[in-house]
Amino acid sequence: MDRNELAAYLDGLLNAGRFRDYCPNGLQVEGRAEVRRIVCGVTASQALLEAALAADADALLVHHGYFWRGEDGRIAGIRRARLKTLLENDLSLFAYHLPLDAHAELGNNAQLAVRMGWTVEGRFAEQDVGFLGSTGGTAQELAEKLAFKLGRLPLLVGDAARPVKRIAWCSGGAQDYFEQAIAAGADAYVSGEISEQTVHLAQESGVPYLAAGHHATERYGVQALGAHLAERFGIECRYVEIDNPV
Image 1 (cartoon, rainbow, N blue to C red):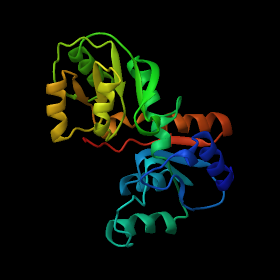
Image 2 (tube, rainbow, N blue to C red):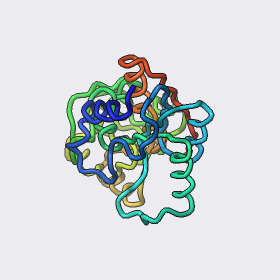
Image 3 (cartoon, rainbow, N blue to C red):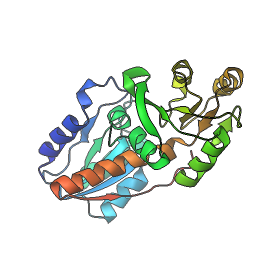
């Protein structure tokens, strides 16, 4: 498939232009014109770049790419090594951040709901990236199911015995949306990371907070997107897990 046609398709599918984001979404580094094989992953780390080379890929498709707002823009050190790997090997880098969190079917939050058996009933937070839905059981039972499905034990802060009927979630580093989740009537909130002040908010509000891992909650959107591309265009898309305990 032509690289630019692929970029245009992904931009349209994920409605990338509507998001005010912390980084550019879409084709971040231009490689060879024809794309036959894609390596998908959460973050465009050096380890993922090396995996793409080993797989003889033409492009990488990730959730966390480069050129984040506020970063030092100089091409040196780790940034130079990563870009050198891409440019010398004519590899393209496609990255979608908030668009891949928010997509109603292929996004990180939608795919997390599929795995957890949560029924999606609404959205909340800035640019509708947070999801609302229904589930059952207690907060402790929710933590145990997250551990089973994601392969790592979440940090549960707050009332573990609280029944959870209405759940809010937003993958990755979305702890700042916790108050909005409470205001939306959530009985519990699931995200990836947790900050010091979040502990007090969970304890004082009575709404449990479950930090299930930034990486662990954001593995599934890019896999679903890769599977979609493979089915629609016949491109080989291979997900590579680069383990991250955070």
